[in-house]
Length: 245
Length: 391
Image (cartoon, rainbow over all chains, first blue to last red; front, side, top):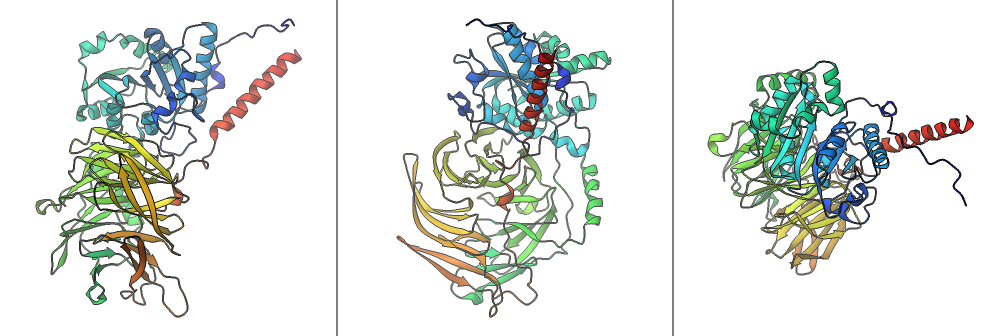
């Protein structure tokens, strides 16, 4: 029998259907599915979770090495995948609609460019609580924290994604020599975050020269949706890169 | 309830502690009156490099508003040498007592930041670790020169910490939390996480170190697990028919010993365990149902169970303690302590229990915001298809 209907036209998802307010309470008990142990995602099936093979159809025996924590609408994640074609990058986002947008975006990109964008994926999770449910000790070589929620109120500082408790956890999932990237447009938050890195013995900041030479330097400042928004508003951007020692 | 080398200490009401001496002679029992007027040393630990002056002022206002609330005890700990007793109170102060054969006196009362969930001394008795319900861990020095030193924040979970264990050599601090995790932190390099013991599917209510590398944990997922905590490896998992809440261990050797586990329905179980080649076998020796909340302690290689007797007409309700006598395979629950210390005014009898675990369950009772969103999205796409077709 002949196929009568037209082939479906693949379109990138429209952001207007996925808008969500920028803040999320990372302490509250939202509904999340997450593996009870990182090894669960290497199995053929993992109830309520996509396995790594389901997320990356051509994974082979590679493991995720780059994590964009709080990836937003995924602009930087896409750029990261294009820059490092042989590395697997994961975007982690807590907001339901925003993470769904990134998943739909990747699906469309894969359909529009067969064989490409196989190395990026997005999961909805609370990275502040469940990072070690996904990654083993020393698994990651790069972590990105781009334009994190500043949580201005002092009582909410604990909710900041860069805080002394979590730095130890990031040091645990990052391998020695791995890099952690931070970008923000809020100067006070920048000072707060760098002061905590300075106080933490597992991280050392790269020199300004080294930071400028990083292949991602310009992309970090320009490629995410947040970065473009700051650009439009003529705001300043602050970048810092730390090495796991 | 907490055990000294020679006596148990517990709180039958909000005002005093009773020490129970481990002989049949109850006249040797004594009470420690808690002096709620002891001056508070308001040196709170610093959190997140913040300006301490502001942090102190923040709390000042709150305290004045809620001053009517009655203070009670939260957690008790004693050193192995029996020279120090510590407890935390609901007014967020840490009392430290110095104890010798003839006397006991308060030596400090230091403020801390948030409601405590667990306190433990190191084996040497010179350091006390305090965990709180917002997930932070603090270190308090407890040698003579440091009785009044400010506590130091050492690390934190983004979750409620439920239990803490310290290895005998003080190389590791092990903490369990509501998010199914057990974290093994290096000490004194507390910024380094040695390993995580992952695998539980509900809150991890209690942990116990049983050898240089073995750890036992119990969880709201009904499982008891055996771990190699050095490399974070799950060695074994055994599923109970009940939700375990409290755990006490008497080790006889690196391989053998006894476990005392209480359930959410207040049944107390005694097991004999044997570990061979990283495999644990459990042999049930006894079980007994109690009608009230229970607390467990270990004294002179025996388990003690604290409970509240029912109200009935002839007898006033009060705190009881049963001793679990274990000889080979026979187990006897002997009532050894009557409510002698209770007077007419002791109306508010309460067992000092660290937490109510029924509030900790997470799975299957969360608001499902994902499903709601997916339903709406599906409807949106279907509508679009329909309107296209109509055109």
